[in-house]
View 1: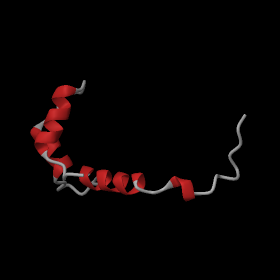
View 2: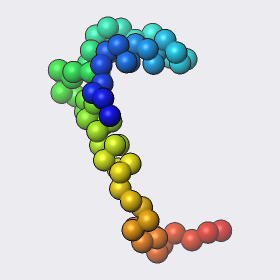
View 3: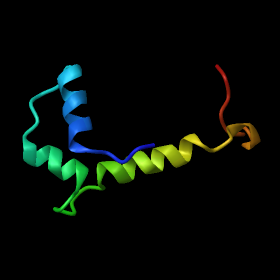
View 4: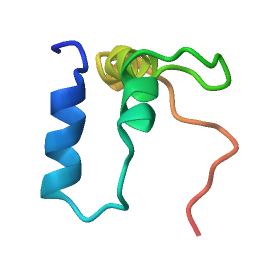
Length: 67
C-alpha cells in the first residue's frame, strides 16, 4: 500500500459525495499535528495489518449463535 498523500484525499473527495474539506483538515489527516486523533495513515496501516490476518486459522466465537 502506498503512503497517503493530500492529492489522494483530494481525489477521493472530488469523486465521492462528501462535504467540503479545508486544506487544513486534509493536511491534518495526512500529517497530524494536533495529536487529538490518530493519523489517517496510521489507521490505514492498522487496517492493512488486520486484512492480512488469515481468519481461516481463527476459531469461531463460542458465544455467538445463529438465530
